[in-house]
Length: 571
Image 1 (tube, one colour):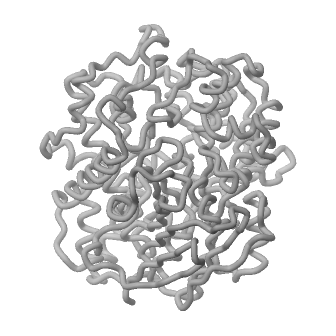
Image 2: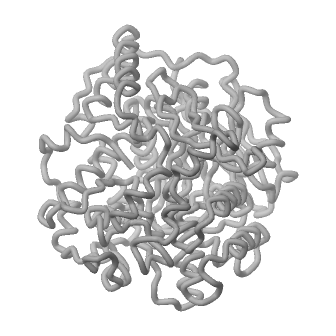
Image 3: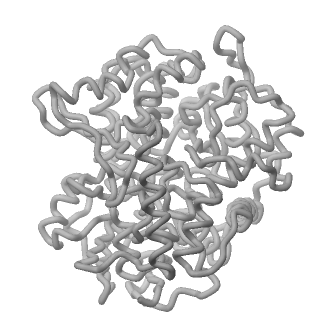
């Protein structure tokens, strides 16, 4: 099957399919998204205007038999950071697109009627825009239920909720999972749902029919490494067998389970919010762990049921427990599950939204711990009220409107759970990543790294995670650069080394930094907010005190060290 590229012109409601460029053969996911944006998007454009470019790019190995390799990258100029952004998601659309022969979807332009809604219907034989005005304002779960009645059982969906339609800067892009078609997987960070909404695109439906998995150039060797990798992973420690929710205890010990808009590094609710309680509830309430996409061997996604055994939400992860729970001083697990479901329904990032609500609470606009008030705010986001728009536009928006002094963001994006005051290496990543505060850009949970090593460890982690985000692999299978190179060699039929994969990872970072440079970013933007430098946490009274000259080293090529080739991707 010849690889193809879908181009969608929303100004003229036109779709074209063209051959995938040969020079992009080894590019997928984040690498492909970044290359397209650097080549085709004006970095100075209005992120919500017609000149922004919206990219859906499955990983280079998506649709193949490589285990847990079907993730899809969503890319655009971010309305939240005003720089380049890639966010990726599980679910089945990435695999389905590549099984149909499509390596990416590139969406440009904007309908002349801002109230117009469209769907993009994709099969191996046809790609077309269809009217979707009747779906305007629908929440994600109802939307996918409606789409499921129209499309075949084999179809998967990429959708936005009302937040994306309103072009709110905290809006996410949802994808449906393997088993129950719930839109519970999200490319959440950076407000990319707002860009999809600005294009008038309510959904993308991908129906692979009975299409086979993508076939490797060296079938025997590829099958061997797939089997060995799967066996080794399943025989190993499987540290993500219960997802990330069970990270709470460790985070509490490390003073990176922030409370009350990050004024403290530990929460009084650590015991009740511990994901071990979710696991314990499986026996009584049902639910359990499942894989969000076909071929996943990690199965990190939890299904959370209510007291009566009815489905409530899935993938209630550590970041959500932290930002919507501890950081808002909300300690009831069911309340946080409700908030998670509402975020998925309305289509907003749980990290950004939790941080925004916490700033709102800290500014005295509502009480810390007010779970019902937080739920009402999610409804207000859907309704498009003034308060809903302020919160839906993110933490920086709340700070701007309340004039509050404590706004934990970097490049306009809310800081995730992993705190840069106690895990200083992650602070270097937040500061230097072109995408702002994003732990999946490069995370090493080690509070003991000396300052003269912070930049190189951050850089190496950013390189390997950028490479991983380009393959389609989930970071939780923790591939090394050698693993990625072996898969590429036998899938694409040409020799690829671990050094080649390191170069691809570095090129991703360079493309992203260059996009931001053209957008007007400078080294002066590579900083953390004052509250991270002034608000001390933990028994050691930790603040982020890494020197600017140390931070700057993370963007200067340090050379490939043996440590880089031994590292595993993790976010």
